[in-house]
Image (cartoon, rainbow, N blue to C red; front, side, top):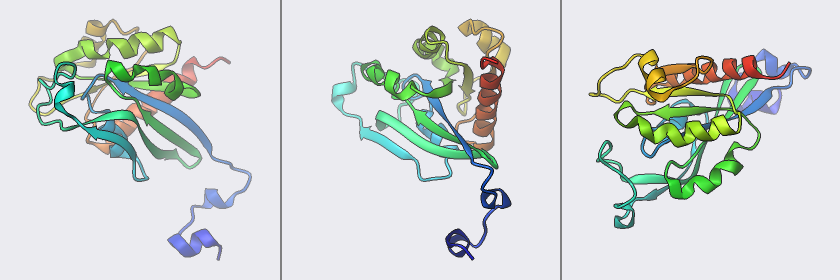
Length: 201
């Protein structure tokens, strides 16, 4: 019995096959302030997510709009980080970006090496995701739009959101709940599929 077996009691067969090295890839989760990026990463991460959250203070009152999220007490100041295994040999590393404009200077570093991005949207303030959409369009990084449906808000169809945001037909738009692991995983699968479709032959 090897170390992994003695520690966990079970090792998947694919991990014992030394000819099948897992493929790991990087995905960025972006969007406006308070749209649910930290929740998204935490919902699917199989490790304890790394969070760089700080308490919000009065200094941010004039720049951070809490109208849609009045109970929000912390904000991401660097990034969120998590990991999810989607298949036996496909591991995704998730990097959540900070949403406020004053932290956008970090995006170039966070995006480097990513195969694609999830742009999260809140239908109460769709305009907040325009900077992320513009950014990923400008650097030609594949993306999907994940509409985080907040409890108690009006539900919209994906096509309605696509039209409102002028998202091109080839980019998937999905309706999801950042608290629900299954819908977050579906959003990631949509992105992986889209990235594979748009990758150079």
